[in-house]
Image (cartoon, rainbow, N blue to C red):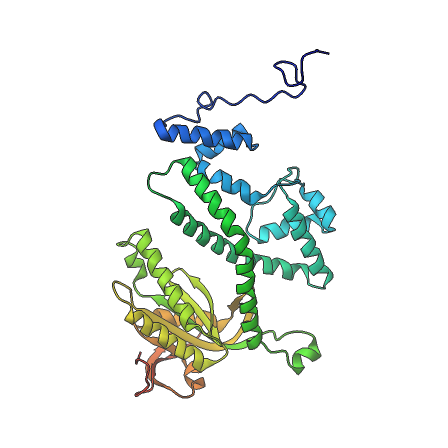
Length: 393
């Protein structure tokens, strides 16, 4: 054994790893001056933090090196587990965890890799508690599918918001990486409480509209179907606009439509979803949804600039609620009716017309043979009563 002091050159049992020559590795190609120095600093910091050369090379090739520090921050630290180890700790079937991850819209993990973290273990334990509480696996998977879609939208919106807000003209990769990491570190602790708050409010509003009466108590099941009025409203000539407007302008139009739809969808009206250039709303209160549809069309007319006109179609009947969405003949019919509505108008079927109470007037718009619907459907244009304080649609 050498008599040299521990840590001296050539004598340590654990010598310091050699720093990578990033230029020789081809990771600085095409860069010079400030940009080259910044990348070299960022590469060195990431390597010191445990990122392999292969990971660095992949990030450079995919032009996402500036985002790698944020990615590692969101991965978290601590112990790593295989899928089987997570399942064992949580006492959950590994196949269920695979299906659960797929239902969230995430790629399947390599069973042999140690990608899972303590956070994954805790999430699996929460699933075990829900199963123990009597919730069925298929119901949890369905809930996860809805959650996955919603969280993907939230994540995309936040990434776009932070990405644009934090980037500065002339930034180097190092500047952007540090600013993104600072933003993620500050915002990440706030996101959980914000989403929990929004979920609690929506749960409360939907519970207020729910019914658990004697029939449900006797059968032990909630009603299989619900009587609602469904509405679709879409932007007129949106396809044509797509040929003349750039992506940012189109996004601005659809974002504004979503804002208007949320504004008019006050309980008992619910905004179910946005589908590109269209909004879907439902309510068990026929008049409330008629009023919301007329408000929506009027609000579009009041928009300044190049905002297109809206048209809306409504139908009423029994639907089945699944995964936060609604399915059934009225939903399909409302969508078909929208195709026949004139710009700036609200068109409905006879069931909506007959269920309407006060505050509306109707004009017969003819009987139409709608795609996928047997027989002719009698259609009516809805307007507000003359003298109503609201704008006549």
